[in-house]
Each structure stands twice: as structure tokens, then as C-alpha cells.
Length: 291
Image 1 (cartoon, rainbow, N blue to C red):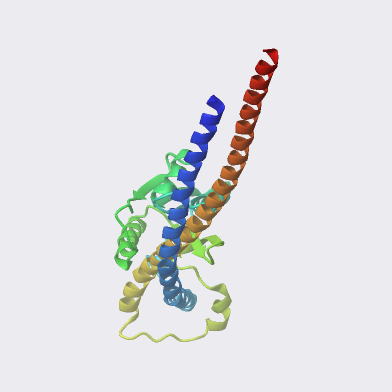
Image 2: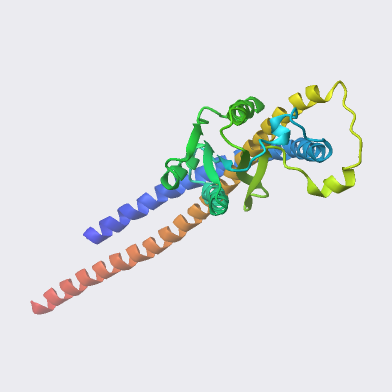
């Protein structure tokens, strides 16, 4: 009877878990639509600005007076890897895939003799402290952000640019998950500081003249920091959609697994109960025959 009681308690526990996972799936599905619309809407501007800056970097003659965000520091020894993850878990492999991609890049750079540091955006990226305890330069707190806004990305961009201007690193790479569907979120990494030169455009545009209005310094002073902020904003929007898509899929799988477990436990419970009843009947019949 003790075994029957334990099975009954376990079935009840799994049923309660199933209700939670089902509710979380529904919440994630509701949030996914809005997050997906925001991510898709933000792509054209971010991609076009990135292309414009890459083309501009290929056309402009870099000199000592050129902005560092465009010309670079002249070195590539210290690399900053910006890792954007979520604040909460229970989202399948969403966060671990981003962290894994960032670690892979770090290992490649380290093998080349480069110095690698990390800038964390999101609580789940803190797992990197386990592997790189002395290489985390900043952990940007994002727990207060309910809905991603450009101002949030701008605050991060301002901090990163200030560190760049202070000479803390030479090249910055950004890692996040690009949303493709509720089932597929692709971890991607791209260089955001300095502007990566588009080599495919460099040859075709090397002789092209570029006219600036009002002037080159004013335009680049506005566009270069804005490009960093926009790329960070895109990463946050893509992550928001990817997180909800991954969580919805993970909770759907968890709900299905709970259903399968309930079915197995119920069969086991019924068999155990039937065996107990059979044993009692045998004992009663045996006792009656003995009389």
C-alpha cells in the first residue's frame, strides 16, 4: 500500500508540473508574436545601416584624424566579446548555444595569441565566470528591462564606446541569437567595433568619390556611435523573440513528456493496485479453504 501511495503522490506531482509547463507555453506563445514582429521590423534599418557603414569604411581614406570607431586602434591584440543572453532560464538551449558560440570564438582568438575579455548582457551569460573568472570586464544588469527599447541599447553602447575610447580593447564582437522560427534560433557573432570593412565592396568602390553634407566629421560622429547602438538594439530584439520561441518549444516538449510520464505511472499504479487486490483475494480464499 505504501508503494500505491507513493505512486499516487508522484502522479499528482507530475500533473501539477504539467499544468505549469502548459501555462508557460501559452504565455511564451503570446509574447512571441509581439517579440517576433519587433525583431522583424527592426532588421531592415539595422542591416542597411551596417551595410552603409561597411561600404563607407571601404571608401574612406583612413588617416590619423579618422574616428577610432571607423579606423580602429591600429592593433588587434585585445578583443572584447559581448555576450547577450536572457535574464531567465527554462528556454531550452537558447542561452547555452549563445555562450557556446562565444566560447568557441574566444578559444580561436586565444589560440592566435590574442587577449580576450567578456562583456555580459543578461544573467544567463554569467555562466562564463566559471570558465573565465578573471576575464569578465563588466556585467550589465538587465533585470529591470520589461520590453526592449532603443534607450537600453544606447546605454550599453555608450558604456562600450567609452571603454573603447579609453583603450580597454581593440576589437569588439557581439554574440546573440538570430530568430528564424519558434523551432530555430541561430547563434551569430559579428564585429561591431571598429566597423568591419566590406571587402566585396572595397574593389568596386575604391575609386568612387564620396561627398559629405554638411561635413565628414559631423556625419561620422553621429553615424558611428549610432551604428553600435543599433546593432546592440537588433541583438536585444532578436534575443527577445528567440527566447520566447525557444521557451515555447521547450515547454511544449516538457508538457508532452509529462503526459507520457503520467501515462506510464498510471499504468504502473493500476498494475500495482490490481496485484494488491489479487493478493488479498488469494489470501481470503486460502483462509476460507483452511476453515
